[in-house]
Image (cartoon, rainbow, N blue to C red; front, side, top):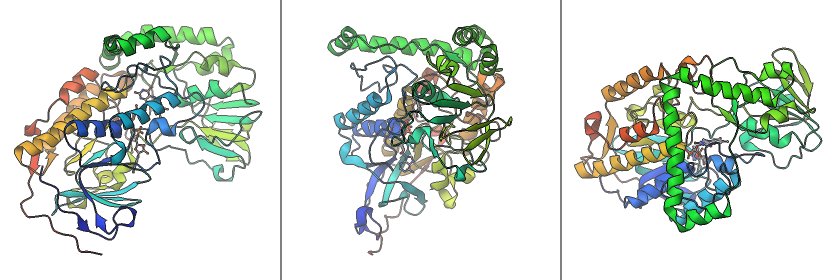
Length: 514
Ligand SMILES: Cc1cc2nc3c(=O)[nH]c(=O)nc-3n(C[C@H](O)[C@H](O)[C@H](O)COP(=O)(O)OP(=O)(O)OC[C@H]3O[C@@H](n4cnc5c(N)ncnc54)[C@H](O)[C@@H]3O)c2cc1C
């Protein structure tokens, strides 16, 4: 990659300074993706980078989601970085505070603090064609960078439906990922809207506290028992004293999940057995036939994210809980009205209604070659080459880009594969003496045609549900239709045949002093 230009004067440098700092790489976001990028950059000998984070601490998902009961649903020993094993995980599925603390520790252990800039919300990323670099405008000033790694998270921007009357609701309203800890739920009438993965953790955690719990359910989820338990002192001792035992544990968790992939992506019919287990789980957990009917999905298991819980059904069957098998339609004063006309008076509404996923919010802020916006580029659906790069947006790399999500496996595996790819791209640029790269139209098209072809057979396409994996046009732009191993193979190296190289020939222009 070309050497960094000299620091240049600019009126809007960070923290009011009169210079615009230039870095080789700007990383946006400090969740697993952004922190992982920082670690990998340093390991590759690249120290000239900044991590821009809109919040005031690291952690992403695990900072923002502090709702009661929040935990991972992939075992902790797999849901962690391969390069930062944690022998101290307290449970097989650890709670949010432990995962957040882990990410804080990763930040310190790998020397990332000096690179972090908090409260720096990126409001614009603009490719400067003559300078061959990105101009990054944030809430605390401007940076320029040779390359940008966008790790803004697939589930970072909450989605609350626009409902008539909601603005006039007299009680509290909040989203699962923005929990209002000042609000005491004890003895209150609480509505939970949505029955996805977050709601399935919130409902059992708050049901014993509240006076009345009303759950608005548009579509039920399939629920399987959660094999959660405390990790014993002996196991922790073994994992810390004899690290290969931790590695073995991770490898077996990995292998087990990898073996299940085929059923989801190529042979959804074989999921019938798992569905029977889930059916039995309903029968065991719910005795009331009417409630049982409400909670029984009419689509194939796996089509939507499978919920793991031993406490969800007992909570819904409790005398103070009510399931309204319909979405929330409107709010009239403190009365919530469902699409089936059911009315419920409540003191507070908790939205477990998910995130902006298929309409990645950062896309609105990215402007590439000829000033074209990424949101415009993606108006027919998000697309990238190998989930990482997009034609027209040179040196912009995504962590968890389009079609890199997983149904029921550890996202960290995908994040680490994408980081391999990004580091290889940066090294390749340096090796060939180019300034920037962008995928060819042909390579990007071919990758997506093949990917969508494979998607046709998956349970997410054939299972008979409408999930958040699908965009407004019904296209799955979220999930990877394969094993994590195949994605790792696909992202091991940058294939230059798939890329156009750009080279800066003129010297970098100096910015005029303010
Ligand atoms: C409740 C919950 C439970 C989950 N459980 C699991 C699980 O068990 N297993 C699993 O594999 N996955 C799980 N996930 C998915 C999870 O999001 C990913 O595994 C992973 O944490 C994503 O990391 P990330 O760094 O890509 O994104 P995030 O963790 O979302 O981090 C993105 C960061 O970017 C910042 N940011 C966004 N926009 C800007 C901007 N414009 N400027 C500056 N900063 C910005 C955000 O503030 C945030 O800190 C879960 C998600 C949720 C919400």
